[in-house]
Image (cartoon, rainbow, N blue to C red):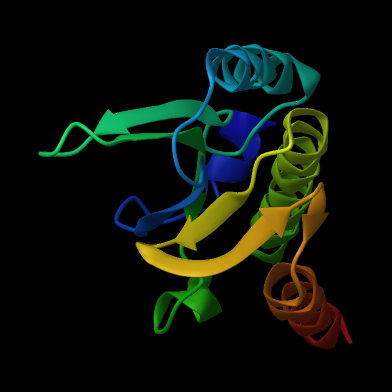
Length: 151
């Protein structure tokens, strides 16, 4: 699936990253859960640009950011019109699966996560639930646009 879908895309089509990271300091149990989740997600399906990866970075003050990151082809202007619908739908499915896993981790470990897309904060997951910005603003709107394009 990866090779077939990628064949529809231009070589220079930009790629964005969706990153879900723990707010504050992540306990060792959360770090371990993130590591296991990244491995399990990789084996669940064929991913367009590869499976979500463990995101583990420290800044200049040694503050650690821990989470999962997924690469997807950008749909931001002017690139959205050139994005193959099959790939766009596959990315939506991938993002849903990743966010579902993030919700599970949030619920099981009682942690909140911030979700960034293309370097901008777009929502949060708290107590195992996506906020309205993610559920309606990202997923709902993405689905609406795809459905309109298919009419």
